Image (cartoon, rainbow, N blue to C red):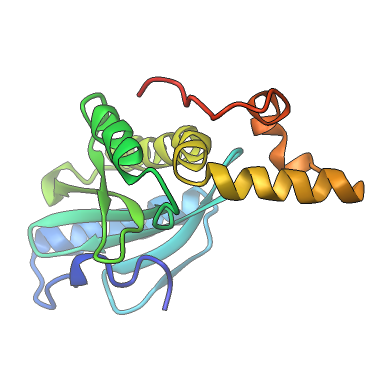
Length: 188
């Protein structure tokens, strides 16, 4: 079971229509043309990963239902600390986002979630939708880590520097770590 299999228990309807069949064909062709490896199981549920820079992989699921196309993407696990700060940042970001918004599941893990009508599921709209998911997941990853995992990041930094280990995966946080400060993630 992937990280996004249980978001809101979403399962596309098993019935079909000409609009749904057209959307299924469009999604399959778009994913192939984008050279994304995907699984379709069951029919109409597409699972794949989008490659990023800050967040190296974003797990995504597209659900082609009878009337809509849903998108669900895992962003980060439940923050260790500062939940209020993380949630405030996410809600402020939601005000400026296209087609998707941040949400949390019952365990507190952070997702991007959205829905568009099947009639809008063109190759161009799929490109915009998946581009939004990739952009928001990638741009938000480090601020979410700074706000919700600062103590763990600091402990990892200290452990690595004391032992002379590489800190390459912590470079994005070097400024506040070396200054001995609490991180102040950029305003949402």
